[in-house]
Image 1: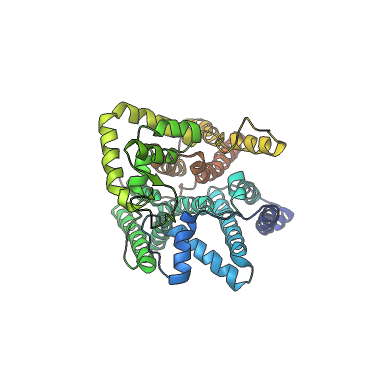
Image 2: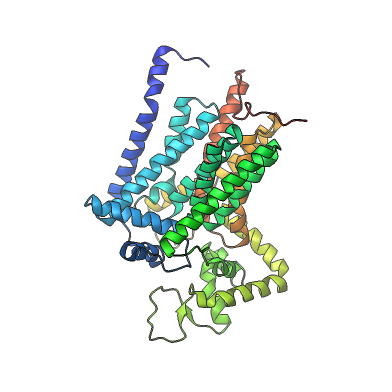
Length: 434
């Protein structure tokens, strides 16, 4: 595709304009929104890190507390308060996501204008904008998920040591924030298996070692020794007990089933990090003292009720894909703002079906490696929520990736229908020897 001189000149400014518009939209949303006092589970690690330069708890992952501590430090240095520092870093995350989306689309030969404008549109995804003034790891998870995917594609195309190291850094950072994202390491097998070259397997090993070193180094730096978050038994018990199905149906999150399930076992617990020490025998349900109990009861439930576990997995998948409606009381007055927000939630739930439809159309023309990497990322990201616990809010980072992939597929289909020659991102890959 050739551009005239004015078109080239205008496309030169499209990315800066998209970044500026994104910042202005974020600033407008933040100015109209209210900073919410965060829950203790998010602030516990960041407060410990700010005051003692250590995170003592091993229950939660350390990635997001590190991000919060950085944001609060920025706020103090700029004299804009802790919430101001959070606003600044969330806007930086949003701008970084825009650049990643544009890079993803440009590598797939999407035009500069379409790539930049599509990235701007995707960055105002309702869930991302809603979290700009809140303590939530959704936005940083979306950035990291996209980063790992782009790095996997770059590694597959360039096959260089630098690309392998960058993939390892992205994977390690993603695992620090969301431990279940460690499954994205399987993308290395997709890359290595696709080329079937010994050199590619070596690069995959380098990327894996880099991720491990980053994870071990970060956890050691903030905790004093390497550790993996110990919230696994808690989350498994949440989605694997007799009360889980009802919690998923009524609250769209199985975590609320933990206290009733513990009561059924004759155990009194609370959901409060600051349980008074003068109440012996009563602990927070996330206390590690319950970890052996959670593991034992989860194993017993799975072995005794395999059919119920299968139905729970289907229910968790449905919960993951369904619109988020549990936050609204439909018996109360439905204000226009609530109706509009529910409409946006329902529209966002259509992204996955839309992507599947486009993928089916694309399959008739043949799936490229870009399609296979995005499909693998989707499966690897979704799998833990089908097995462990689920919530529609967990879908937001994946929806951002799939929305960008919808743009990529639709653009390629339209160009091929118009008779224009399209070149896949991976056409320059060397073919494996026969």
